[in-house]
Image (cartoon, rainbow, N blue to C red):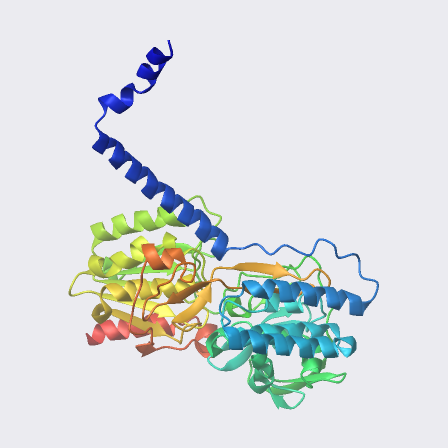
Amino acid sequence: MLGKIWHVLTWPFRAIPWYVWLGALAVAAWFGRNILLIIASVIAFNPIPVPPIFQGEPETILEAREQDLDYFNHVRRNERSLDDAGRARFDAQLELVRADMATMSDAEFQLGLARVMALTDNGHSNASATRMVQPFERMPFRTAVLDGQLHVLRVREGFEDLLGAQVTHINGVPAMQAMYRFRDAFGGNDPFFESFAPLLIETPVYLEAVDLSAGELTYSFILADGNSQDRTLAPVAVEEAARRRFSGDLPMHWKMESDHWIAFQPSGDPLYLRHPDSDYWLEYLDDGDIAYLNIRANFSDAGEESLSDWVARMEVELRAALPGVIVVDQRFNGGGDLTLTEPLMHALADIVGEDGRVYLLANGNTFSAGIVNLAMAKETAPERVVLVGEEIGDRLQFWAEGWWYSLKNSGYRARYSTGYYDLQNGCSGLFICHWGSLDIFPVIVDDLDIDIPAPMTFADYAAGRDAGLEAVFAAEAAR
């Protein structure tokens, strides 16, 4: 009886040749290895920080800060951009914060932690400036840097006369110099820093932390009518339900914190400010010979069409339309999932053909996956891809991926980075280079320098002009 059962069970091994079994085993092993590698990569590049379990409720401010420092020190071990020397500097700076924290204000404590994190000098591994200012009273206006000048683009009701004004000084200190007093609290390059740093000069407790205020704050303005004015202003109460807004996003005049704010409205209807309800869209110009694509984010918006579906549709449509010029505007693209746009970015130069051109509009807001988009487009045909605008928001070597974390007592929020990208030399190393950039989308370019400078000035913004797109038209006319 047992012999018959064995005979039935072993029939496949007699009927199917050994080499077929060997091949099936090899395929299963290959798939199993890759599945395990993917799972390991997800865990390795996105470790979730677990808050300390046994910390009780703090009884004093000092105890609360001790708890936050313990957690901060724990999560920094996930930051892979630090080498041994960097970790030593990190630990030494952290001990300085620990030594002084008993006398620090809440803002000074958060700024101290930001300065520790900034020692990574990595644009992704930064404190969240929007979270840093969220708990504190702020001025009744919001500013953004436009071509090296600080301009008011939002005001609370009752301060409409400040809309469009240039902030020239804060308590007698030139405004941009005042802003750069916070430079040591953030890693990365200057254009990216300027896209969020105005948040801090609108927040009195942070100005006090860098010795710019000891009570009253006087801002010097050049108003929209050209007149100069000094105003001693008081902050307004915190709006608990207000939406956090990045300074660099303020030119998109529809992005508001709450209904209590009024936005500066540029004249006309510039192309780059159309379709406020969509983060990706296409418009044909010059009788269809120029295709203008605007990609404001590398993730799906709230519309019915996902970004990946839109990308697939755009490639089919553009190959059918055969425009001679494609313009991709990513001046507000702060990043997301680089895999979603990869097929289109790598296809652009092929679509326009040997005699066509691809123009990429960028500035300091172009960050992370937005930068990789530029590199993917340029990699395919660097001689036919032209970068227009202003310097991008990061270097070509950076650490990304990782995770955000928050300290429960102070509310300080930052992120650490775990995956390395090198867009100039390529990257190798298991669990060092992010598996997507390493195996699926290797991208290598000589540089992403701006070929045609076209800064966004306030005068152009106010008039509804787009210097970047005008530079594209001028280049095509010359060609």
